Length: 188
Length: 182
Image 1 (cartoon, one colour):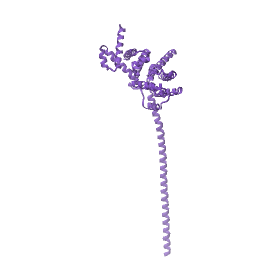
Image 2 (tube, helix red, strand yellow):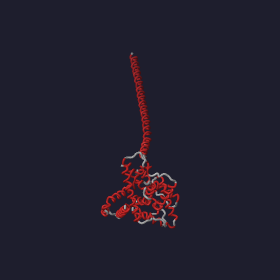
Image 3 (spheres, rainbow over the protein chains, first blue to last red):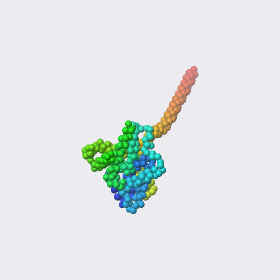
Image 4 (cartoon, rainbow over the protein chains, first blue to last red):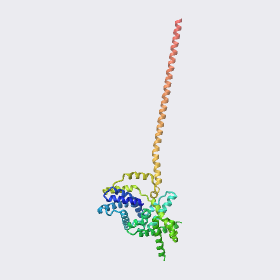
């Protein structure tokens, strides 16, 4: 998320905290893209991530409404709810022992030019590499390099110092780099 | 030993990332850690590759619309954004991002086919209509022609009749004149 977006969210939250409820929809709109990307990458299934995203927004606003004077309304509140919802989803998923659908269902397209196919392969390789990271490393990588948050912000979301968040990012990047290298070597 | 090397590598990458966050250029970061130049370059390349994937994940606005309408049902504070409808319409008109293409598979082909089908749905009735109009016009044209011909014939016949009448009356007058003379 760009710094401008964060500033905008802070401003909107300030107005929402003062009781101006019209700003909730705007807040929802600002969070939509980054949270969609986060949930999608963590879950890897479009239909389920769309559904979970709806629950996340409703849960996030619900918890805001039920907390006295919107005290829990921070810029990272939505990320926090999204993280917890994804973890819950994963736990339930493990319990019902469903097969991990992964992004493969997106790579079955028969048509497509060479660029599209290679893009698809790259994306799937990235997804597969991501899946092998720990949950926190995945969060750190997505928040930093997909959603554009700073290490300080990531530290706030993951409840750790910025340095620890930076460590997760470094570990994640090194692992993905090695994993992708290995995959390309195997493909060659 | 290997663990120490890994730890060192991780802390160098950590520092490099921190410097990058502070706005330092890659060349100056690499200068600071010359022993890890290739490592830093590769890891930064991986980061750039991940960032490219941002655009590959398409967030359709209709989901946002559904969320807002669901929230409006559940809570009092969510209001639909009218601008959203326009954006959704534009989105479906303009964008065809990669991820959408991934998940749709050969949706592009299908949509092309359906477009062709829709085109033919319009073109075929137009052609049929044109043919029918042509036939009607031709028929009415030929009818007009035959009417004209009929009229011509009629007038010609009338004229012919008049001529014969005038001839016979002329003959009659001339024969009366002859009789008078006699």
